[in-house]
Image (cartoon, rainbow, N blue to C red; front, side, top):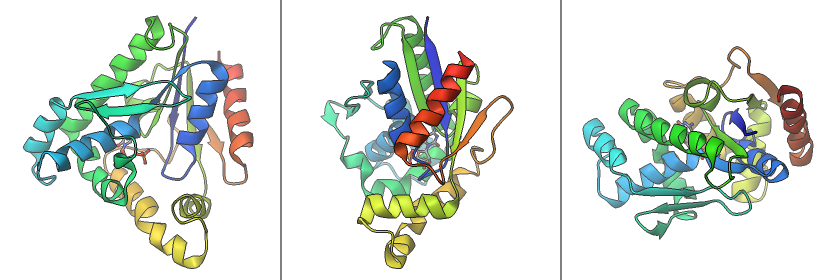
Length: 229
Ligand code: C5P
Protein backbone atom coordinates (compact mmCIF):
# COMPACT_ATOMS: atom_id res chain seq x y z
CA UNK A 1 0.00 0.00 0.00
CA UNK A 2 1.30 3.44 -0.85
CA UNK A 3 1.09 6.55 1.32
CA UNK A 4 1.12 10.12 0.05
CA UNK A 5 1.81 12.74 2.72
CA UNK A 6 1.30 16.40 1.73
CA UNK A 7 2.85 19.10 3.91
CA UNK A 8 2.35 22.83 3.32
CA UNK A 9 3.50 25.82 5.30
CA UNK A 10 5.11 29.25 5.26
CA UNK A 11 8.85 30.06 5.21
CA UNK A 12 10.64 29.06 8.39
CA UNK A 13 7.89 26.70 9.56
CA UNK A 14 10.45 23.89 9.36
CA UNK A 15 8.56 22.02 6.68
CA UNK A 16 11.60 20.94 4.65
CA UNK A 17 13.55 19.47 7.59
CA UNK A 18 10.42 17.93 9.07
CA UNK A 19 9.17 16.46 5.77
CA UNK A 20 12.56 14.99 5.00
CA UNK A 21 12.77 13.32 8.42
CA UNK A 22 9.22 12.00 8.12
CA UNK A 23 10.08 10.51 4.71
CA UNK A 24 13.21 8.86 6.17
CA UNK A 25 11.33 7.42 9.12
CA UNK A 26 8.58 6.00 6.89
CA UNK A 27 10.82 4.88 4.01
CA UNK A 28 9.04 7.18 1.56
CA UNK A 29 10.37 9.35 -1.26
CA UNK A 30 10.78 13.07 -0.55
CA UNK A 31 9.68 15.78 -2.96
CA UNK A 32 10.71 19.38 -2.21
CA UNK A 33 8.47 21.40 -4.52
CA UNK A 34 10.00 24.69 -3.36
CA UNK A 35 13.28 23.42 -4.83
CA UNK A 36 11.47 23.08 -8.18
CA UNK A 37 10.42 26.76 -8.08
CA UNK A 38 13.96 27.67 -7.07
CA UNK A 39 15.42 25.57 -9.90
CA UNK A 40 13.05 27.23 -12.39
CA UNK A 41 14.19 30.64 -11.12
CA UNK A 42 17.85 29.64 -11.39
CA UNK A 43 17.24 28.43 -14.96
CA UNK A 44 15.54 31.67 -16.03
CA UNK A 45 18.42 33.73 -14.62
CA UNK A 46 21.00 31.39 -16.19
CA UNK A 47 19.28 31.66 -19.56
CA UNK A 48 18.94 35.44 -19.34
CA UNK A 49 15.13 35.28 -19.26
CA UNK A 50 13.73 38.53 -17.79
CA UNK A 51 11.62 37.53 -14.79
CA UNK A 52 9.16 40.34 -15.52
CA UNK A 53 8.34 38.83 -18.96
CA UNK A 54 5.40 36.55 -18.15
CA UNK A 55 5.41 34.71 -21.50
CA UNK A 56 9.18 34.20 -21.60
CA UNK A 57 9.21 32.80 -18.05
CA UNK A 58 6.29 30.46 -18.84
CA UNK A 59 8.09 29.22 -21.98
CA UNK A 60 11.37 28.70 -20.12
CA UNK A 61 9.62 26.75 -17.34
CA UNK A 62 7.77 24.59 -19.88
CA UNK A 63 11.14 23.54 -21.34
CA UNK A 64 12.95 23.33 -17.98
CA UNK A 65 15.26 20.27 -18.13
CA UNK A 66 14.79 19.36 -14.45
CA UNK A 67 15.42 16.07 -12.65
CA UNK A 68 14.55 15.75 -8.95
CA UNK A 69 16.31 13.09 -6.84
CA UNK A 70 13.82 11.84 -4.25
CA UNK A 71 16.03 10.03 -1.73
CA UNK A 72 15.37 11.72 1.64
CA UNK A 73 18.93 10.81 2.72
CA UNK A 74 20.25 13.12 0.00
CA UNK A 75 17.71 14.76 -2.27
CA UNK A 76 19.18 16.25 -5.46
CA UNK A 77 18.14 18.91 -7.95
CA UNK A 78 19.69 18.66 -11.41
CA UNK A 79 19.06 21.16 -14.22
CA UNK A 80 20.40 20.41 -17.67
CA UNK A 81 22.89 17.94 -16.18
CA UNK A 82 24.13 20.42 -13.56
CA UNK A 83 23.69 19.77 -9.83
CA UNK A 84 22.15 23.05 -8.61
CA UNK A 85 21.42 21.90 -5.05
CA UNK A 86 23.61 24.65 -3.58
CA UNK A 87 23.09 27.33 -6.27
CA UNK A 88 19.31 27.43 -5.70
CA UNK A 89 19.70 28.33 -1.99
CA UNK A 90 21.38 31.72 -2.48
CA UNK A 91 19.80 34.98 -1.34
CA UNK A 92 19.58 36.01 -5.00
CA UNK A 93 17.34 33.04 -5.83
CA UNK A 94 15.30 33.47 -2.63
CA UNK A 95 14.61 37.09 -3.45
CA UNK A 96 13.55 36.34 -7.06
CA UNK A 97 11.64 33.07 -6.67
CA UNK A 98 8.26 34.71 -6.05
CA UNK A 99 8.40 36.12 -9.61
CA UNK A 100 8.21 32.55 -10.92
CA UNK A 101 5.84 31.35 -8.18
CA UNK A 102 3.31 34.08 -9.03
CA UNK A 103 3.42 33.26 -12.76
CA UNK A 104 0.26 31.17 -13.15
CA UNK A 105 1.43 29.38 -16.30
CA UNK A 106 4.68 28.43 -14.59
CA UNK A 107 2.66 27.17 -11.61
CA UNK A 108 0.48 25.04 -13.86
CA UNK A 109 3.53 23.44 -15.46
CA UNK A 110 5.39 22.79 -12.18
CA UNK A 111 2.20 21.54 -10.51
CA UNK A 112 1.68 19.09 -13.39
CA UNK A 113 5.21 17.75 -12.96
CA UNK A 114 4.77 17.49 -9.17
CA UNK A 115 1.56 15.55 -9.67
CA UNK A 116 3.34 13.21 -12.10
CA UNK A 117 6.06 12.48 -9.51
CA UNK A 118 3.44 11.76 -6.82
CA UNK A 119 1.48 9.44 -9.14
CA UNK A 120 4.69 7.63 -10.14
CA UNK A 121 5.57 7.04 -6.47
CA UNK A 122 2.17 5.51 -5.81
CA UNK A 123 2.84 2.82 -8.42
CA UNK A 124 6.62 2.44 -8.38
CA UNK A 125 9.23 5.14 -8.82
CA UNK A 126 12.09 5.67 -6.36
CA UNK A 127 10.03 4.35 -3.44
CA UNK A 128 8.91 1.15 -5.21
CA UNK A 129 5.33 2.20 -4.59
CA UNK A 130 5.69 2.95 -0.86
CA UNK A 131 4.77 6.57 -1.54
CA UNK A 132 6.07 10.06 -1.03
CA UNK A 133 6.16 13.04 1.31
CA UNK A 134 5.62 16.14 -0.85
CA UNK A 135 6.05 19.57 0.71
CA UNK A 136 5.39 23.10 -0.44
CA UNK A 137 2.69 25.77 -0.40
CA UNK A 138 -0.20 24.24 -2.36
CA UNK A 139 0.29 20.48 -2.11
CA UNK A 140 -2.60 19.89 0.32
CA UNK A 141 -4.94 22.08 -1.73
CA UNK A 142 -4.03 22.09 -5.44
CA UNK A 143 -1.38 19.52 -6.34
CA UNK A 144 -2.52 16.57 -4.18
CA UNK A 145 -5.81 17.39 -2.42
CA UNK A 146 -6.42 13.61 -2.49
CA UNK A 147 -3.27 12.83 -0.46
CA UNK A 148 -3.74 10.23 2.29
CA UNK A 149 -2.37 12.63 4.89
CA UNK A 150 -2.54 16.43 4.67
CA UNK A 151 -0.71 18.65 7.13
CA UNK A 152 -0.32 22.41 7.45
CA UNK A 153 2.84 23.13 9.40
CA UNK A 154 2.67 26.57 10.99
CA UNK A 155 4.65 28.59 13.52
CA UNK A 156 4.36 32.12 14.82
CA UNK A 157 6.09 34.80 12.75
CA UNK A 158 8.60 35.39 15.57
CA UNK A 159 9.50 31.70 15.71
CA UNK A 160 9.86 31.51 11.93
CA UNK A 161 12.04 34.62 11.74
CA UNK A 162 14.27 33.38 14.56
CA UNK A 163 14.65 29.96 12.92
CA UNK A 164 15.60 31.38 9.52
CA UNK A 165 17.97 33.90 11.13
CA UNK A 166 19.80 31.09 12.95
CA UNK A 167 19.96 29.06 9.72
CA UNK A 168 21.31 31.94 7.62
CA UNK A 169 23.34 33.94 10.12
CA UNK A 170 24.04 31.53 12.98
CA UNK A 171 22.27 33.83 15.47
CA UNK A 172 18.82 35.29 16.10
CA UNK A 173 19.94 38.70 17.42
CA UNK A 174 18.12 41.84 16.25
CA UNK A 175 20.43 42.47 13.25
CA UNK A 176 20.05 38.89 12.00
CA UNK A 177 16.26 39.02 12.41
CA UNK A 178 16.09 42.25 10.45
CA UNK A 179 18.32 40.83 7.67
CA UNK A 180 16.00 37.82 7.44
CA UNK A 181 12.76 39.80 7.23
CA UNK A 182 12.70 39.97 3.42
CA UNK A 183 13.21 36.21 3.11
CA UNK A 184 10.35 35.31 5.41
CA UNK A 185 7.74 38.05 5.65
CA UNK A 186 8.01 39.75 2.25
CA UNK A 187 8.34 36.45 0.34
CA UNK A 188 5.34 34.91 2.10
CA UNK A 189 3.30 38.06 1.44
CA UNK A 190 4.15 37.85 -2.28
CA UNK A 191 3.45 34.11 -2.42
CA UNK A 192 0.13 34.59 -0.59
CA UNK A 193 -1.21 36.53 -3.56
CA UNK A 194 -1.52 33.26 -5.52
CA UNK A 195 -1.60 30.46 -2.95
CA UNK A 196 -3.17 30.26 0.47
CA UNK A 197 -1.00 28.49 3.04
CA UNK A 198 -1.69 30.27 6.32
CA UNK A 199 -5.02 28.65 7.16
CA UNK A 200 -5.70 24.92 6.88
CA UNK A 201 -8.17 23.91 4.17
CA UNK A 202 -10.99 21.47 4.99
CA UNK A 203 -9.61 18.14 6.15
CA UNK A 204 -6.04 19.46 6.59
CA UNK A 205 -4.51 18.96 10.05
CA UNK A 206 -2.60 21.92 11.52
CA UNK A 207 0.62 21.26 13.41
CA UNK A 208 2.00 24.35 15.17
CA UNK A 209 5.75 24.04 15.64
CA UNK A 210 6.30 27.38 17.46
CA UNK A 211 7.12 25.65 20.75
CA UNK A 212 8.50 22.38 19.34
CA UNK A 213 12.00 21.36 18.30
CA UNK A 214 12.64 19.39 15.10
CA UNK A 215 12.28 15.98 16.71
CA UNK A 216 9.05 16.91 18.50
CA UNK A 217 7.60 18.30 15.27
CA UNK A 218 8.54 15.14 13.35
CA UNK A 219 6.84 13.06 16.06
CA UNK A 220 3.73 15.26 15.86
CA UNK A 221 3.50 14.76 12.09
CA UNK A 222 4.14 11.02 12.42
CA UNK A 223 1.22 10.84 14.88
CA UNK A 224 -1.01 12.54 12.28
CA UNK A 225 0.13 9.97 9.71
CA UNK A 226 -0.64 7.07 12.09
CA UNK A 227 -4.10 8.45 12.77
CA UNK A 228 -4.89 9.05 9.10
CA UNK A 229 -3.79 5.85 7.33
O1 C5P B 1 10.05 26.17 0.39
P1 C5P B 1 10.95 27.16 -0.26
O2 C5P B 1 11.22 28.38 0.58
O3 C5P B 1 12.22 26.57 -0.79
O4 C5P B 1 10.14 27.65 -1.54
C1 C5P B 1 10.66 28.61 -2.40
C2 C5P B 1 9.52 29.36 -3.06
O5 C5P B 1 8.85 28.53 -3.99
C3 C5P B 1 8.43 29.90 -2.16
O6 C5P B 1 8.77 31.16 -1.61
C4 C5P B 1 7.27 30.04 -3.12
O7 C5P B 1 7.40 31.23 -3.84
C5 C5P B 1 7.49 28.89 -4.08
N1 C5P B 1 6.64 27.71 -3.87
C6 C5P B 1 5.35 27.72 -4.34
N2 C5P B 1 4.58 26.60 -4.28
C7 C5P B 1 5.08 25.48 -3.74
C8 C5P B 1 6.40 25.46 -3.22
C9 C5P B 1 7.14 26.60 -3.27
O8 C5P B 1 4.90 28.76 -4.83
N3 C5P B 1 4.33 24.36 -3.72
